[in-house]
Image (cartoon, rainbow, N blue to C red; front, side, top):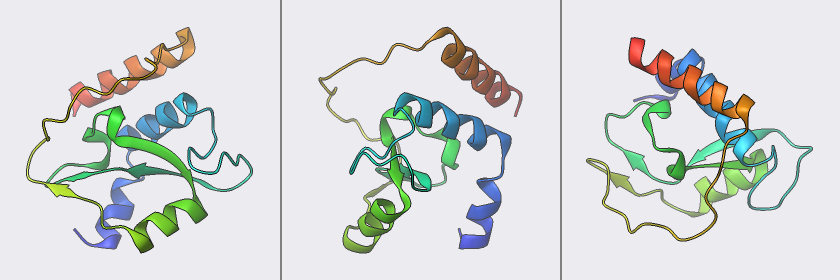
Length: 115
């Protein structure tokens, strides 16, 4: 997929909603440097062939500022899988969604099921 095709996908309502869910989960700050005042991106920690940006499990998405995101892509090759990898279950905090966040997640799930 070329950059133009990918840019078009990022305008899809499914991605816009998924992005907001991740931003809210990460408290609208970069998970690398903790800044809030920079342009924030959603980084895919892995790539899965033939998967659209919003089709990833939230555990593969993280909020990064533009600078940190550019540094990661400049210095590190992101692993690409043919299908969803069988990763070990991560230990750590479980995220509980607020009522509003749950509504966003439900809206996203509904949009996803209609497409």
